[in-house]
Length: 110
Length: 110
Length: 153
Length: 153
Ligand SMILES: Nc1ncnc2c1ncn2[C@@H]1O[C@H](COP(=O)(O)OP(=O)(O)O)[C@@H](O)[C@H]1O
Ligand SMILES: Nc1ncnc2c1ncn2[C@@H]1O[C@H](COP(=O)(O)OP(=O)(O)O)[C@@H](O)[C@H]1O
Image (cartoon, rainbow over all chains, first blue to last red; front, side, top):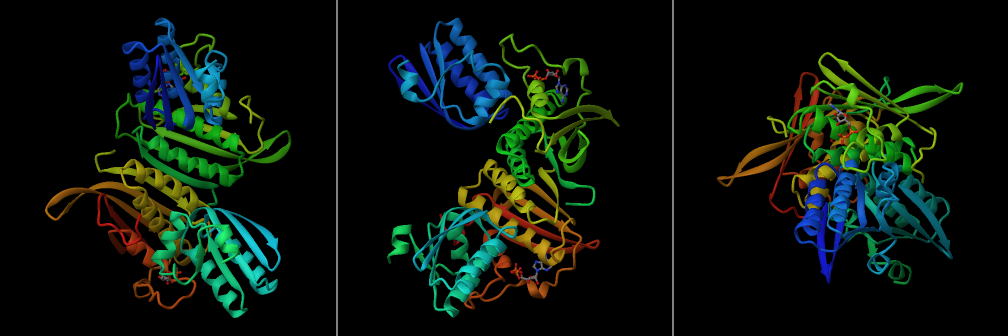
């Protein structure tokens, strides 16, 4: 997995690539918590277009990010869900809990 | 591996997808021999753009196709070599023996 | 395939980086056996979650402990018809599983963790735990042309 | 990784469809260990060719016979420096290898077949055959940051 950050005005977009699993989800968690809790960015957008695989540890990182975003009045937004990501969120009954868009344009200006 | 044929005037283009290895190369061999020897098509073009992997058994099928094409005065042309295909042909010292093009346009009207 | 229907055996270490290696092998194996793309993803998810649990709970996150996985192509009878299934057995010498904890948790309570067993149960047609000679054994079955899972396409 | 540097063991059957499964696992393993893309392709090609030979020559093309593969991360000394390498051992109970036939053939003679051993030798940094207790053993070594192969990028 690789994460790279694009920092816009009051928004950070993380481009995530590869597999989010037990080996890599701690890095995603760290990136989310840093941006939402430490840097207090009001809006964090996750571009998941290039995520080939996500398991429950990846979902746990997203849920933790969501909790922290709510605590700090920020927004966590997802877009570009691949079948793997969509399925684990559906199995977790979390598709309706997250704010999810089709593409970056919609995610940036909803 | 999957092979599908496009038949133009005096030319057949095979679109090959996936891995060409011990399990699948017999099918490639069969398709080549049918077109060159049985149907006596004067020009057979192999589109290898979507070949992720090729090993020596794939190379052997190509070499057999080349032999048969020479025997019957036909042409066997390759295009769209991926790194894997290019490397095995280079290791086999066959890059200069085959007629190879970058793309379909060049392969059709050289 | 061997006479016993054995397709593949793996012995790996309890290192998180190995999950990706197993996933790639298994995805390919399931595809070769004729499972649909969605079924392949389901099998891969279930095994990844089970291995994650062995690494985290069975071995307490410690690396370098052995995990054995075997993959067999078995005959099954369903609704009076003959069918085929992929049987996967995972074995570890880690901590004895507390079966009371395995059931998972209600999903209404949105919080991190506690999803793995739920995924495994949803993705596979049969899930069985056993303790045998000081080892944990998890047996997972996926029917070819089995019931369609809720997770869709 | 285990104390012995053991990364992974595989037991497969001599079925051509299993080659793809092994390739996917190995490509991922080699990537995880830090090999470049070209090096990963080289290791995968060498192992695929060696398994192809075991299936075709060792077992005469018969399916259902066992092949064992083990992957270890070993320490090596090169030019007085410490380095790391991937050691791969393939074992089969097939026909005894006739070492006289192994050397391969001159490539100038363009004809199908006879390329496998050449690929293996080009792709790996060390190749060793051994007959041990009625089994063929092929040991392949790939150095991390080893000499660049001729095959390029
Ligand atoms: N292989 C295992 N060994 C020991 N305990 C396990 C194992 N798998 C699951 N468990 C227990 O079952 C519980 C539920 O597992 P799971 O649903 O995967 O969620 P999580 O792992 O996030 O807690 C775990 O917290 C653990 O107590
Ligand atoms: N695993 C093996 N068992 C028995 N004989 C082998 C094995 N591998 C290679 N050989 C012998 O070495 C020869 C050269 O092998 P190779 O270069 O791969 O070309 P090919 O397999 O196309 O003949 C083979 O024809 C065979 O006689």
